[in-house]
Length: 563
Ligand SMILES: [Zn+2]
Image (cartoon, rainbow, N blue to C red; front, side, top):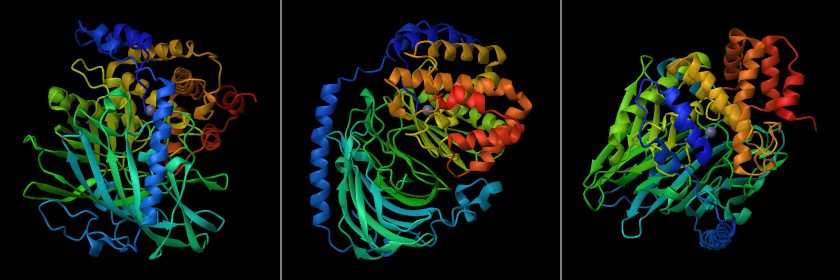
C-alpha cells in the first residue's frame, strides 16, 4: 500500500524531486494543482466510527441470518456450477477441482513451472464467481461459491477453522459480504460470527491433526458500493469494480489463535494469509447497459475464456499466491512483455488511455530491475490497474491498483512501489499488521533502486534526501521501524517511520555491507523466504549469515528499538 502524500510532501515531490527524477521530461505547469489534489481526504473520525458500527451491526445480522438459513451445500463446483446462474447462459462445470487446482504450471514462467510441485501443503481454492452491476444504484454484486482444501501446517491440532470476510472491514472496504451455506468435510456447519462480522469461526467435528487436511465449501454474496474515489481499497471508482479478497479466506494463526481481530486502525494493510493455489472462474457482463465493453483484470493467467451473448467468462490459474484480486469495468489495456516472457498488462480508464502504455512500461522496468537485484518474478503475468482513490496504490499478488494515475506521470513513484511489493509481501510474505516494515520499507527502497537504474545515481540520492526529510516530520524521528501498525500515533507517523525511515535503513544496511554483499543478501533473503513468511528476526538472521558479521546493534537501533 502507499498512502497518498500529505500536501507538503507532495509539493516537495512535484517541485524538486519529481523534476529531478524526470529531468528528461518538461516540468508540468500543472504540477502544483496536481499535487494539491493529492491531499488525503480528512477522515472525520466520529462519522467513520458511526458508519462502521452501523455497517458492522448489519453485517453481523446478515451473516448470522444467512448462515442460519443455510441448507446442506453441494461440495463440488465441478458438478454444481456457479451459485448464481450466469445471465443469458447455462453455466458449464468448472474445469478445475481441488485435486487439480495446483496444476498451475501455466501461471508460471517456464523456468519456474516446477515451483508449483514444491508446496504440497499450500491451501487450494476453487472459486466460481458471477459479477453483476446495478447501473442505477452504482453497485456491483459478486455471487460465488468456493471450495478450499486446507492442511494443518501447525504443530498442534486445530479444534476449529476460521474464514475471514474482508469486505466486512468497513474501514477500508466499501461493501458487505454475506456468508451462505458452509460445509466442512461434506457436512454442513454453523459458523460463529466474530469481530463485528469480519470473521466466521467454523467448528470441527473432530480436531484436525498436524499434517491432516480437510475440504470445505462456502457460498457467499458480496456487495460492492461506489465511493472509492474518496479513499478505499474495495468498491467502485469511476464505474470500475475493484475487488481484492472478495471471498472467504483462511487467515494465519498468531500466538495460538487465528489472526481474526478487527484491525486496530486504518493506517495500513490489513490481511495476512499463507501462499495458496487458486483456480477460479469469473462470469461477468460483456458490456454495460450503455454499450461500453467490460474488461476483466485479475490475478493469475487466463487459461480459458468465452462469450455467450452478453455474458463473458474467464477461467484463471494462479501460481503460489497468498490472496487474489480483480478489477472489472471499462478499461483500456496496454502490454509490455519482457525478454524473459513476463507480460505486464496495464489497464486504464478511458480518460487515461494515453497513460496505459506508460503504466505498463514503468511496471515492466521495475520487474526487470528487481529480477536482477532481488530474484526472479516467477509468474507469467502482472496486472496494473488504474483505480482512482485506491490510496496512492494497493498491492495484491499478480495485480496492483494505482490510485493516482494522471496525465502528468505523477504515478511513476506509486507504480514502482506497488510493483516492488510483488517481491516484498507477495512472494516474500510478512505480517502486514505486526511487522509491516518488512514489506513497506522494502517497497519504498525499491523506489530508490528504480530511480538509480532508470534516472541515475543523483536521482536516487535525491530520493533518499526526500525520505530523510520525511523522517524529520515524524513526532519522534528516532522511533524504531519494526513496530506493529497500531504503535504509530497517526498515518503521518506510520508513513514517515515505516516507509521513509525504513527506506533509509535499507540504504544504511547497504552502506554497511557494501553493494556486492547487500545485493547478495537480498538474493539470499528472497530464496530463503520465497512463497513463505519472513519475520524481522529472520531478516536479521539472513543478513548476518550473508555478511558473517554481527548486525545486532544496528537492528536494535533501527528496527527493534531499545525497549
Ligand atoms: Zn506499500
